[in-house]
Image (tube, rainbow, N blue to C red; front, top):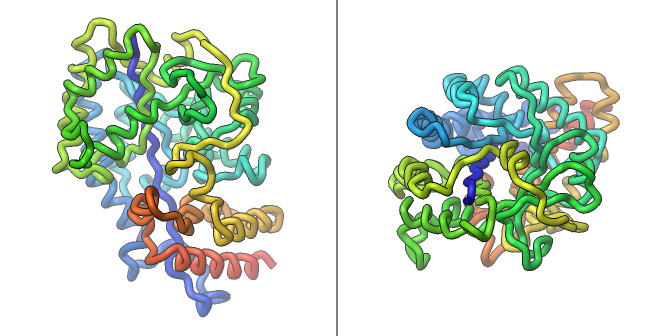
Length: 396
């Protein structure tokens, strides 16, 4: 009897504007420029909220009221929550209404959606603490399940989450760590004593998130009855169907005219039409199902690109240079004691900045181009490094 576990990641970065070398020493506002529509964070947040978050939240609330068995889980980055408070408070209220139903859970992550775990454990823990406090402030709940930025996971992260009392941690159900095993069971991180590991069913998740509107796909069009049959087919061969995806799937990545909202509207009733099916939050998935095996992930696995590793953020010299430079400034920034400067530094650790510098092509090139607001990865790198030059001058 498979249980569907919906988990949605909700995040928008503070994008760095086209910061020129001539701005260094003069302009300390790195993130907003009203003259640059492609990089204006207020405009982008309001646009995505109008196209995706607000209609999707209204639909989920409708489904939660209609189906007492329906449940979902969210992770909202701290920088997204900040921007919703400032630019779209009505959208933040709609997320609160979902959580208030008692059937929508919130996960823990880094406040700044950073890769700090792999560069500075102390900063990683500070950002996790900041996020936990923000979630408590806004939603009145304490996260008990953890997901790292971009689902970036290895054994060390599993052990860290175990040590810090989380019930479960999320990861990509990729063959490199699973081997012959199925992502449709609960596992334990290698060496962990108590925590459980929930793995994304990447095929079924990506059928919705990436292939839904792809007319050359053999399964197009994807309908709720067809997808629910795939869920029911797991009966007897798995406990869970973990559908992990970006929330922007609904309305932004897959536009309304693709039928994505109608698909979501019909899906719960189609899934629940089979008496053995159900829905669970990530917390319930961890509590309700036994551990089937231990999973060994010595190398980092993520949910990005065909490689499912960190290469989308660390795969070229531009990215490694930018990452090393920003983390080299950590101690100096913190020692300044200036909360504005420290906040600027932390916003610059957000993983999106390094994703925009990616020079991949072939299978992943179109994906990177779609998410990149700059004309090229080199333009993203130049603007970012100019900002770091100004930041270093401010620190000194």
